[in-house]
Figure 1 (tube, rainbow, N blue to C red):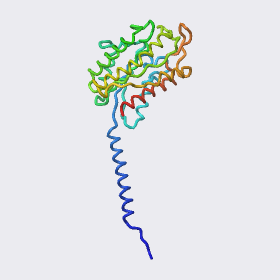
Figure 2: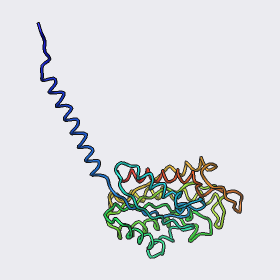
Figure 3: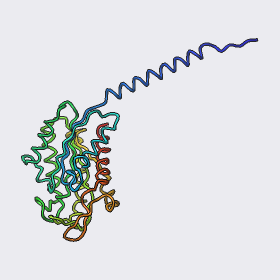
Figure 4: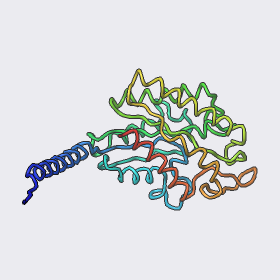
Length: 265
């Protein structure tokens, strides 16, 4: 007796294969459709600027961050502006200051104005100083007020933009260059972190999906790896560690990139 395999099995196989191919194509089209261009303005201090790096134009953390974002499947073209200024505190970034005006002008100058606009903010290091920087030492409450004022202005002037607040990074407790930081400053800096987290929560109601906490890992990373990732600098109380070296700039830039990529998903 001869047996034959019912044709329905082959048809089911073909049907299943066809459905699988169509599903894959559909998912690919969705992924392509969701690919978005991004304009990034980095607001910060000397760490953002890339102070002490051999070539800040290619090595500063914002450059590394952008390079990371360009590798993400949901992100298309990325334009950016590094608005880092050495020594700046939150007072230097308040509405009406030259720094914030320049940052907003940079946001308006991007070629593709249809791209998603993101402001990445990392300020607080200079606020924490004991003396020597504008307004130092900036109290926890004043830091919160200043940071909120800056964010509110950006949200007002750029409807629909996203604001990402990066946690500050660690510096050695003997840091003392033109300004005095020391252990008092480092302790104060750490009191700003919960302020950032709580402030972001308040925007979930007033400005949903616009203000986010960015990187939260870099502080502990540099505390642990300062000898390999921060620049040794001669200060008034010996060698101190404050600014990332090329290795540290890569680490910090990627921390920022991963945080921003998460926001953009």
